[in-house]
Every structure is written in structure tokens, then in C-alpha cells.
Image (tube, rainbow, N blue to C red; front, top):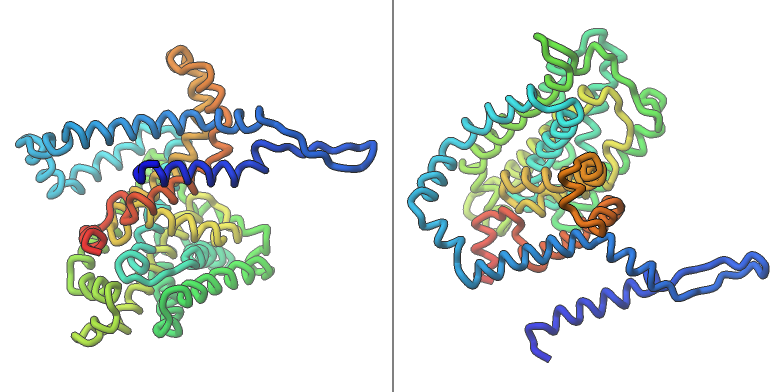
Length: 424
């Protein structure tokens, strides 16, 4: 057997062994004898893989494009054209000034559901940017990041009961600084911890906070808190509340990107990178490790707290579900998928991991309501799309495994990380 195909064949064999009892066998109850019988059900496995046929088709197209690029080198030829080089140079220098009006203009052309969806995307981008500071730039593994997100949301919600006038534009800056203070206090006992130990401490903080707010009467327990309508996003200057939420989220996101990128290319960013690579060596050359770690914790927590205020002002309802462990893992996966240490990669990972499952749920109804798509899409694909969203977590796991195997630095991995992986 060729060594080239051995890993693929072993992978298929392992997948078949793991899925055999779940897909190829079926339990049938026998009520007469009160027993369970195991029957052979190949149709169940065929139906399962048939529902995933769009994914197999997409993977085939990606493989064909990758193979043709290796064979004919069309990406290198495109990159060497003068027009492409000039466009790339202009985009690199002025992308923010071109992207900002385009993004903000979307508030006047999208539907209410579209505005809500992309506002949520912006909130997750903020969370990914904040977590990328600690995990990607400083190398501090944080598994309880959703705790800071919940702190900002509950700070905004609880303040409604004590102040008759406490709008989002006042709560946002206050939550930023208070969240930074909480991150600083959490960072103090974590200065000597690294790796898994640091992850466990931050996870314990988030879980303790979630259990606490779920058992206090002042926080509404598991029922949550409904915010006053006067404090949430509402119509202003002829615009709806959803448009205001989208514009505010976009402006805060641009401000966060500007701040983080300026820090990343400053001595502070270089100190974070030095700590990530080798903390002992960084301390030996004069890098203030304690101060830089605390700054990373504080800024990361501050951004998450501000994102929590935006979420509360948009949704109008806060519950302990905002700071679950699954939420923290989702944000961490966004950072890893986009690329550790790259702010734009973190935003790309957030957009993909949020929008792809959403569009998988909307795809069947879109095909059914469009006569053109119904005529183009084959019947077997149309039937498979009906159940594709049911397997979104399975697809999520498959994508993460593939990324770790073939592109561990992420989609837009940092140049430093790429160089280190190629050299090692």
C-alpha cells in the first residue's frame, strides 16, 4: 500500500469502526417480552451520509481547486500580475476607510432579521478580538472568557433596578473599565500559572459566576432579567432600533480593531509576543512580564464586558445562558479557526462559525421559495439540505479536526506562527 494513501484509508476504516454501532445498527423494542433487539439497518447509514452529500460535493470542489492550483500554479500567476499587486497594496493601506462606509450603509438596505444576524456577528467578532489578545498574542489559555461577557451584560441589567436613567451609551464605557478591573483582579492570582492550570482557573471563574447569578434573587435566577425598553436600542433620527444596534456594533468593532492593531505593532504587542514565545527569555531581557500579562487580561475582559452591554441593549433580556462553557469554547474555536495572533483572522473565524450554521438553517426554505434554485438544485441535494442543519455540530467538529491537521495556524494565521511551524 502506498504511504500516500495509507493515512486516508486508515482514517476511513477508523470512521467506519466508530460509526458502526450508531449508524449501521438499530435498537428495536420488543414490548411482548420487554426486551431490546439489535437489527441491521443499512438504510439508516445511507440516509445519514446522504444528508451530508452537499458537504462531500463541496469538499470535492475544494480538492479539485487545490489540485489544479498545484498543477498549473494559477494563484502565483494571479499574484504576480501588476493589477493584482496594485489592488492588494491599496486595500492593505486603505481597507478600513473603504470598509467602514460599506458596512454602515448595510443598515439601510438589510431586513430586520438580517440586521439582527449581522449585529450578533459583530458581537462575536468583538469577543474573538478580545480573546485573541490573551490566547493568540500573549499565549495565555483562557477557557472562561464568557464570564466577562456575562459580567458586562449583568452589570447593565442590574443597574436598571437602581438608576432610572442608565442608557447603553453610558453603561458601555463603564462596563469597559469595570470589566478591565475584573480582568486585572483575576489576573493577579494567575500570574504564576500557565497552560492547563490557567485554563482551569479561568474556567472555574466563569462557572462560579454562572452558578452564582443563576441562584440569586437579585439577578432573576434562571429566569433572567428583562431590561427597561428605555435603556435598550430604540429608534432615533428616523432609524429603527435594529439599525441603531447594527451601526453602534460596527463602530465599536472598528474602534476595537484600531486599538488592538496599534497595540500589536507597538512595544506592548512585541512584549506580548515575547511572553508567548518564551516567558523566561522575555523576563531576562527586561520585558515586564507581570504588567504585560495583567494588561492583556484587563483589555481582553474589558472588550468582552463592552460586548455584553451591546448584547443586552440589543436583545433586551439577560439570562445565565450568556456565560455558559459552550459559549467560551465557541469563541475560542473562532480564534483558532481564524488564526492565533491575527485580529482579522479572529473576525473571519467568528463570521464563519456564526453565519454558516445560520445559513444552513435558512437554505432549505430559500431553495423551496425560489423557482430558479428549485429548478437548478437536484432533488437528492434538495432533500439533503433539509437535514443538513441537524449535523452542524458534527460538521463543526470535522472542520476543526481538518484545520488542526492541515492548517494548524488557522485561515489567516500570523506570519510569525507560520514561520515557526515551517522551521520546526
